Length: 237
Image 1 (cartoon, rainbow, N blue to C red):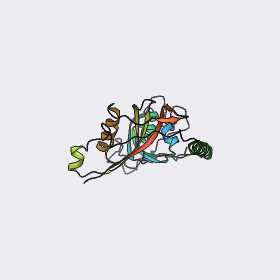
Image 2: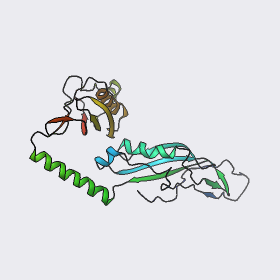
Image 3: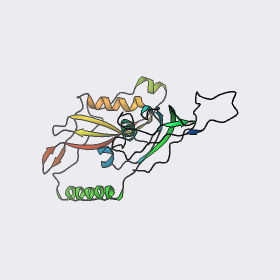
Image 4: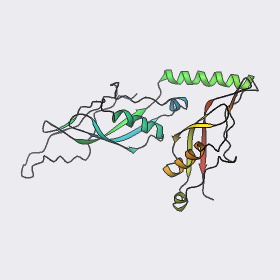
């Protein structure tokens, strides 16, 4: 994970300012130590599997007691699951932060912070080994195949949200889908957003309705549960 600099407080207007005073307030920004167990985000397994990386920029409100009262994503990493993963530990009361101060007194301040999601060499090596082994199996065994979803099949194609049509929204939603050995879909996570929440939710909810039956993965000729990455293209006619 990234070693993060001191939080940057960009637009704080402390309520302790004395209009009649000629002296400027001394503002010291708060700090978050992401290496603390309670503060460190966990790399989502699906993101590791698909080697997703990026930088999430957040606006964090740190109380005088050193806990986050609000966390907002102001610039996405490009992957919803990464953004949500970094927000979760920060909102945990167990994650203690160093509060900012104004003239030496701890105050509730809003600061901007970035978290960089990156894979280290060990992670990449493990993923590469997995891909090579999987590729070798697929080439030598014709009765082995990955899972597949046909969005043109009955019950799988999502309906274009009316609001999205009205606003001419389009894009590509990338998803991580868990498919059981029977072809049922029981878990769907958005890996990469189309940039429109309505579109992402529409395809995710359609897959989770239970009406879409996928082709399960095969291993040694037997159906097995697995995760697969799929993309859905939203385009206007």
